[in-house]
Length: 521
Image 1: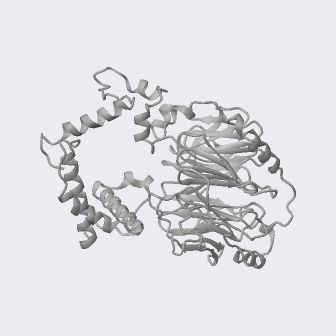
Image 2 (image 1 turned 30 degrees about the horizontal axis):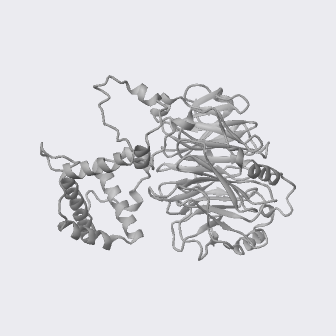
Image 3 (image 1 turned 45 degrees about the horizontal axis):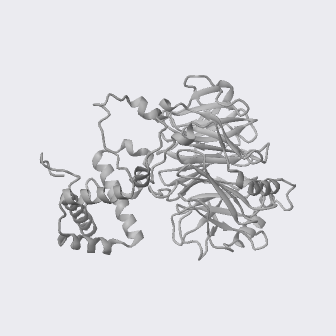
């Protein structure tokens, strides 16, 4: 950027110059592959680690991601053509262009907001943050990628439209859980592998969400395939496969990181969002109610919520501050206990399947830690055990009986630990799997998860080509890759039906990819 006192970034002539400079820079990097300092892909960190990078490293990372996106989309030639065309572009005078734009907008009845200085108007920042005023139509159109969380975060209960009553009535009937006919996840490993290898995408991918899918949950009902999707914009989508019908609702004001069906009430589901809230959705009442919410001032300091797990009939909730809170789902916004577990964000939290007083956390500081709920205080506590990693984690989960644990790390490793004995002799992994876990800024992060009711196999997304989902044995052997000609994109977010051989992958376009047998659908 030229250091000239007369430089004006809003001048169309100067905007063209900036675009020329950006295009020339792209050409140089493409032809000469020059970067300083150089980073290998294994050294590139996730977006949540950007604060650890220097300015030069951050700039280098962004440029590499941008070049990667251009190659994926195949627009390098278009960029070169655009750069050449810009050389012959006739500059438009600022005054005439803006006056014409304003005239056209006003003749259409659209009021153009006048930019004013909040400092000169003596308007405090708190008043601006607490404002619930809706943006005018022009601003809302220009900022369509931004999420206005004031309309949903502060609502205690969100009601669904009355016209959706028929959909919810049908959904409620299909949510009834009966005894499993054939529990796919309880068969022996040979039979399990044979069934997995028979799965395929029998239908095209299904568009269910407007934005990137961040979380998935599959209901245990076998009457229909019922999937709940949380996306980047805070929407929750309910999809009923038997009718190929879905409904989406703005429930949160930020990405929905974690969503799950309630284990003691099949008609309820819990959702945790980056907006600092946890909601309970009730299918029968057609409502989404707040059961936990950080105040606005706390959220501004980065204390967002990240994950939840059931503890008896309560919830343990992880946050971006490194705390874990214990709440009673029957008493909204009352924290029963809390502990500061990590110096940075808690990525996932999970209770031990059998030893209920223990819970596991993964963090942004390269730690997987085991804690005792009975030791929770409002101060930092010492972990029972700690499993160190070289870089930040995206997840860590116990197997069905808790005898094994799998972790997913940004050092491009998936590790398996023996947790049959909870002592310091078993804090080193007995299996290390090389796995590309760098999804970049356009894909949701990958999390290795165990197959339900099993200790011998887990699944995870993949960055390999052709696009695929991977199923591993707990000894590190790849059992099978789920792939199809109908699967044309990466699916980092994956869930499996609790009893049936149905794997569902979600992508960045809001589409579901369902692998199953023809009889199951």
